[in-house]
Length: 442
Image (cartoon, rainbow, N blue to C red; front, side, top):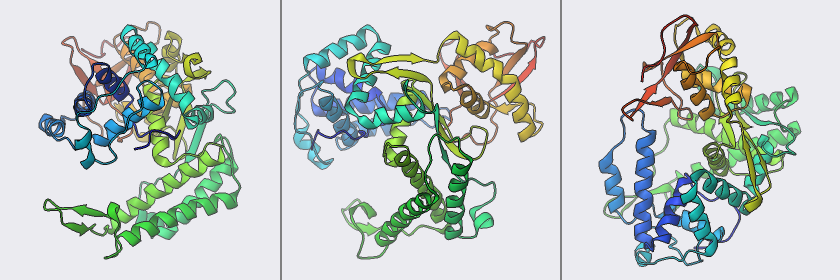
């Protein structure tokens, strides 16, 4: 498998870089590195589980199966080679070929050993160094930061990708797929005419590129559903090795697929028009990386017309070893987040009804977008206010564990540690007068 190229690697979590580098430093084999990454993925899944869905037996089975997480392992080792932190070596190209590489070990370079020492000394400094190395290695990462406003010479402090959402079903709103696509194209063009998106494109380009992307994707899907024309990606293999055609999608599934394809098309259009061509998966990875690193944030649910909004939460200078980071994480940023809370709370209550409690994730999206801060800064500020540690606010925050409808998959409930060391999940909040004694009990 090649270890060249500058495209965005398929690293779902940057924490795997540290896990793999440590295993290499300890002289672990490919199979042992794979098992270590599975264990780290399991720990991450447990840390993120807020619904009691974590299944330890599932993760134990994955660790025991040498064909599980092979691609994750290959991707992280490939990236370590690209960064020059481990010596280059041939890697397995498929899950089944991993067995031939199971006993292979890898050699850490002096630069890799220096990074590991930095991580041991200070994890935050280590991940700053990783961010600098990734920016230097991947021009698209640098381009992403520039477009969302994280570079000193960025033209805007955000990038907005218009979408089309409706409370009614797709059938009720648009009748059929062509109608939805027509409405989506018109919505994007109208948003561009309004301006303030951080990008622009001629209406003809918008129309042509969105329709071409969706048409090509639907055409590929249709060809895979025709008997005798399925390719390897469109067939599933049974336990005895027998191939079967993929079952055709239902009408509801086709409608959901169309909505997804329109979003993918819009992402590709927007980044291309703004001067940084990215495929949809690369954009998803970069928005996840930058949120983890405290460099940028995103939300589908900030107030305003339906859109995916991405914005900087830091200023990044330079790249590589010379990279510098100034994040919006100071006590002042905590304060400005809470200063915006009463007004946004009143607006949200006016829009969504007169219930006493409001979803934390919805209030978070509004405050973070307005104040250009990260989810983690808002959560820390909200927790501090709820504990009464921010005097002079003029209000008190009360948090509750009660659920309040479905939390979107891209948003997280509020997790706060208790005195026992475990985390408690808070879904809703209310604002009380300052003389109220209610707050959060941990």
